[in-house]
Amino acid sequence: MPRLRLERLTFAYADAAPILDGADLTLDPGYTGLVGENGAGKSTLLALVAGALEPSSGAVRVEPGGARVVLCPQRVDDPGPDALALAAREDGEARRLRDALHLEPADLARWATCSPGERKRWQLGAALAAGPDVLLLDEPTNHVDEAARALLLDALRRFRGLGVVVSHDRALLEALTSTTLRLHRGEARLYRGAYGVARAAWEAETAAAWDARAAAQDARRRAERRLDDARRARAAAERSRSGRGRDPRDRDARGMPAKNLAGWAEDRLGRQVGVLRREAARAAEAVPVAAVEKAIGRSVFAGFERAPRPWPLALARPLLQVDGRPLLRGVEVRLGRADRVRLAGPNGAGKTTLLVALLEASALPPEKVLVLPQELAPGEARRALEAVRRLPPEVRGRVLSIVAALGSDPERLLASLEPSPGEARKLLLALGLGRHAWALVLDEPTNHLDLPTVERLEATLAAYPGALLLVTHDDAFAARCTTSTWRIVSGRVER
Image 1 (cartoon, rainbow, N blue to C red):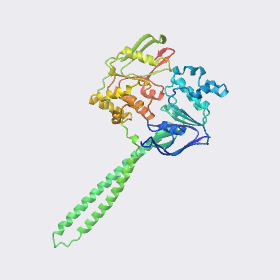
Image 2: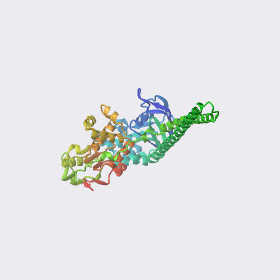
Image 3: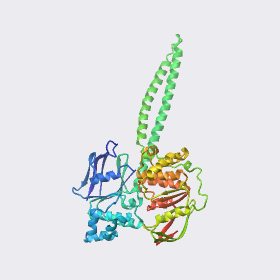
């Protein structure tokens, strides 16, 4: 059975701080979830295991020697030779894989028009057909609808080797993984259990670290108060002795022992305070940086005014078409000014078409509706950055407060030339929320976001008092953020 060993593994890009610093652990057969903030090194670690990158020091060892490692990256731009080979094979295993994943060899001839779900199914089928001992998956369910996700999960469960999964899909991690590898500030820690159990464990560690820090600070403060008392006692003894020293007839030597006793107590307490200060500093350093997180405060939405009309978004159309092809019939939907609705349906059912028609029909002022598409257009991230810089100070402060709550450094973001895809999405979300938009229309808002940021976004949207229309394949995210569902079934919108 395959095993993966990281032996004092360290990796850094150029002169940057190490992304991985002395990672030392062993992964056994079965699936391990790989989690961490954007930039923590998840994709880098997959590339190191796949042999696409060389460690700065230490080693990655896959046992037994000669074991086959296959990496499925996030992007699937072309089918690749393994997919072409799977399409051409006629043996029983190839047929089983194609049937299980609903793959048609003719799909490869129309690759440019294949949906993200179709491409992911071909990528995974090709990877499994290659007979890997170690399977590395980077966001396998990105852009994948419910039906395709179920097929992928079923195929992955049949794999009997060692798998490592990077994903912000909590349901996938819970269904598939039995251990969790967390990357945080250069450290790699392995936890038993899927994401939910592992997260509870590191949150308990964080809480214990905070308790230890508070206890150490309390002990230091008590010792400092005792030291102050000892100093005052010594000063009083010194004043008493000095007063007696002016009377040459005073033979009473009791002042000297008092001074000596006070001085001894001061010295002893001084040493104790020094020890406790060092202990408090060590306890403070042990508190994970991630624990010091900014939450969305009520002040961010203070003075929020909902849309003046009861239905900010409304559409009544007998027919919606795309390129002359009927797509949706009998459309009649309304989104109330405090409604929180999920729009669900398979890829290609017409979700994006409905969103576009709904926005056009409603004609809200641009600054009062936030529209976040699945993928940002070229230059949109830079334009969002410029928009934030031009905001009045009060609004800019709200926006940057939300950026911080979503896990990014506002100052660093403002100083950047162009944000990364994940940070650009945070910036656009913060713009809409900070401007007190009447409605949010979000199409797969968790794309390009790491799992901790997804959870922060859930909390942020939960505090938002306006209208929300959400398209997402993440059931857990939808359950936290919405209260009702519009579902597209057979060309109609069911509510």
